[in-house]
Image (cartoon, rainbow, N blue to C red; front, side, top):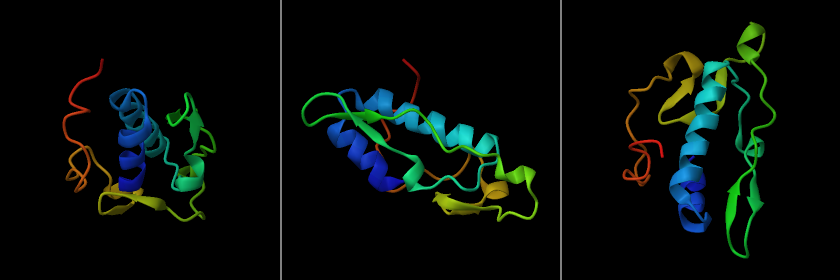
Length: 105
């Protein structure tokens, strides 16, 4: 996740907006119980030469509806790997920008 945030911060035309979109995507994934959300479910679209934006969310499946499927997150959020461990109070990732996501535009 840290590499994604650094890529967005470095290459998005509007990094704050795109980081909020990433936060929205990850939040939605957790809320619906999608333990299979991984890096291949996050893509970038070129907007201008040398710039990117997040692609629309895709590959979302509420895997928690199927108890026989693994409930450990394919991509950790902070130190949390199990969906039940993820909360709004996880520590902020080391190196992630702090000033971009304080409020919505």
